[in-house]
Image (cartoon, rainbow, N blue to C red; front, side, top):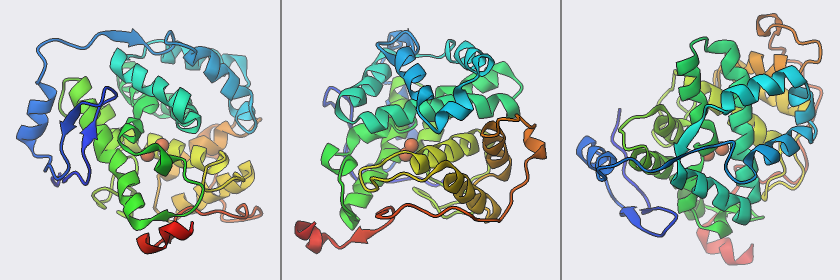
Length: 306
Ligand SMILES: [Fe+2]
Ligand SMILES: [Fe+2]
């Protein structure tokens, strides 16, 4: 694994700097970070924290998620697995912080979590491994604590320096989770670091090809939720058909996992076919929404004009 260098500082919710900008994430640095405290941080059940359970139920009602989550049996299975998720209270406080300040990010983390449970239970048959996988969902973007709110909520195209700051959330999440789980290389920390990598090496922060089912599941859930949700830079979301066509396009192009894409498509079918019966068709009938600024960038010198 290549060593990464932080472009910006990593700061926890209290404002304490864990690592300064410019730090190279070497093994000794990460081991020190994981072992800095002698005792574990107090832990909490995710579903019992604040309004998390009620919020998830509400999110499931909103189209197009109602198709995936409406069924009672699916919801029961989902909450049965989600009920086993326990994590340091500091991380739940950090998740909840977004409920107040950036509701989109809060909702996104919980929906990626919910999707990863339904996808994961089709592909991961060992309960302990599945639990490891789903633990990563609600905190995969926790590194956004280290990205200024005006960048997270900016309604116009980002500048190149703002994109660098936004991308910092991947390594920042890796550092935060290494610290709060008190362990180096937990799956949750690796997911935080690698969920924007791609199978063909077109992602970040390393730009190396990723081949890991656990990360694939969060990656596809993350892309799908981003497509079908309104974003600050794209007021209109993709309709579900167009979003699934885009997921299919990326899977066929080798950018994201074809298997995970097929599971996602099967979850969207009311007839509930097994995912192995869902083919990845190249047919495209939908159209991306107008006014989409995703991936568009302006130069830093033009920022004042935005
Ligand atoms: Fe992310
Ligand atoms: Fe995300």
